[in-house]
Length: 325
Image: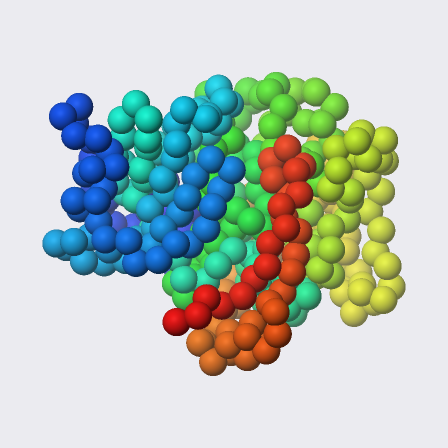
């Protein structure tokens, strides 16, 4: 269940995609302006801008990620090459810029969904988690470690759910190979990653466990700051106020996914076969809220404020609101 651009997709068949490279005769920005019309600005990243665009002759709606290559560190350049390889429909690139044309999804990311609702209903959380488990199982069956699973990297659309941002993904040569480089996002990264030990597919299962915990209560199980995590024992607590309604078996599933010992965590295949996940596969992830629902939620006040944490644990304040039409 994936598109041919490498993004793992549920409920949507893949279609052949076009990959292009800019020529030395024309700068990437010039080719971009010739081929695409910018419809609106969508957001800014640490080294990029994202705009909604349409192709001037072929139509369609896409997202264009414009990256300034001069400011990239060596690590960022590796992450960029992964994104280009896996996610881009079209790539326009020269010495100073890399412009990726990617699919434009209509439902925002899972972080925004949880922030909007506070937490997800059990049935909705089941549907989301079943889709994510399917995506991670697909990656692991192809010896791919994602290494940065978090709500910000899970995109929602009316067609399904997509696990995105493969910038830290690693292709292993076998299921027995171990990775050693430290990467990911504090609060979602497994203890063995934070402690500098070698690791395998179990780290993605740990990150999935953190996501599932957040879906059901609205807050993370562990600190989001690296200095606090280094002293943390990773004990999983379930405060009664938010967790009394959750079944004991579901809490046991979360505890197993968040086990400090990676050998005690279930594999993606075991998760796929777990009764709670099996039941979730019968729940189709919800379609994007209607415009009326969104206006009621986001235009009644100043928007919903929240804090996102980047790969290095750096907080980024965000306010979720509808842009004026």
